Length: 83
Image (cartoon, rainbow, N blue to C red; front, side, top):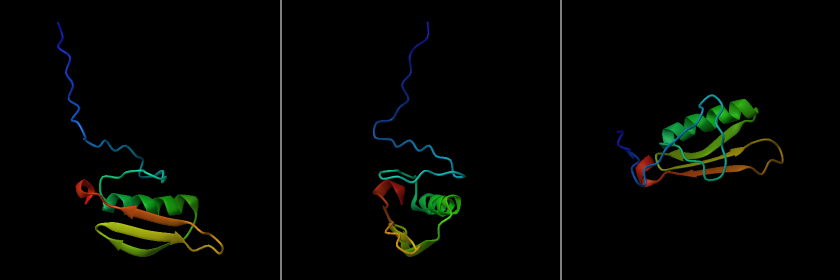
C-alpha cells in the first residue's frame, strides 16, 4: 500500500514564471532582485516601452516609463529571503 507523502515545506515560496514573457503585476514575487530586474527588462521589451531605472540596488528597484504623459512607476522591494 502506498504511503502518502507531503513534501511541502510551510512558508516556502514557490516561484513559477516565464522569463521570455514575464507578468508584472502588484504582489508578483521573484526569487531574487536580480531575477526581477531581468524580468522587468524583458517585460519592457515585450510591451515596447522605454524603462528608466532611477534606483537599483540589492534591496530595491525604482523605475518608470519615460513616454510623455505616462504616470507608471515600478517599485520593487526585496524581502529578507529574496536578496
